Length: 261
Length: 66
Image 1: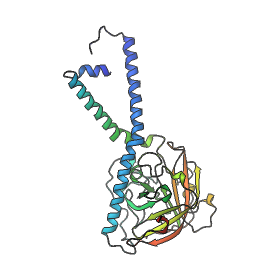
Image 2: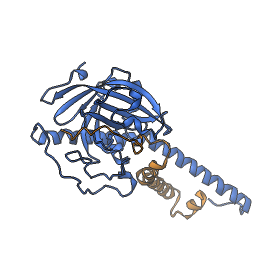
Image 3: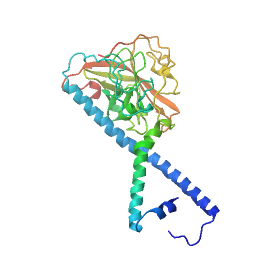
Image 4: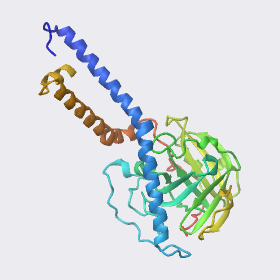
């Protein structure tokens, strides 16, 4: 654009500043678009993909009573360098969380929450790295390691906003609702006993084998669901607990009672 | 800044518009693919996990998955 007269220095500075501020605003808007829209498209696609892979892997191997034990720890090749593939336990994706356990960063179970929709189905990925949480629901791998259905606390976490937001409407859950976890060999039906419980992010007690705030006798088979609260922030955490009410052996065509309409 | 870029683009108006569009798309692609995912963990609204490092858990482990 040919300028009619040379711009003064003041005018140049004002104009340059305005353009920079405008650009920062644009990038900020784009960030919102990315967080609230694009990561959901990517996250839902990634969740769908890992679910399909999971079901395929279950079909391929012959269903035995117990899955073949896997060597641990397995040195993996992480997709990315940096903190993206490191979980809250400081462990990298690609390593086994427990002997015979799943590999961090890989889906090993499926989660069903009928209250969040009859078709609600998300992969549960081992570990809680940023990458794992982009694929679906992450499984805490702190000691004592607890697999679905075991005595102890099976803790899972998922995004409430963005990245597929599996727990967007977690706050709709009420006591008595069913949460079903499907593994290769079993269906575990949990029933919500308490929640929503809002707490600070550093309150790890909620994931203890027997969280004191529940006041339950020991030896429980618990599930803990965690996400952020209020929505769009990381200020607090929203917690739900459930106890195991049914275990069913997986067989063709079988659907647990909690998932039947 | 924008005027400076515009002045330094080659070609006539239409070529410049085309190049500008490609530039904008390339920048958005870079932001969405690398810069935003990199920045995401540092933003204060994506954390959904609780720290369990400070828990003294005395209950015995449930064993191995089966």
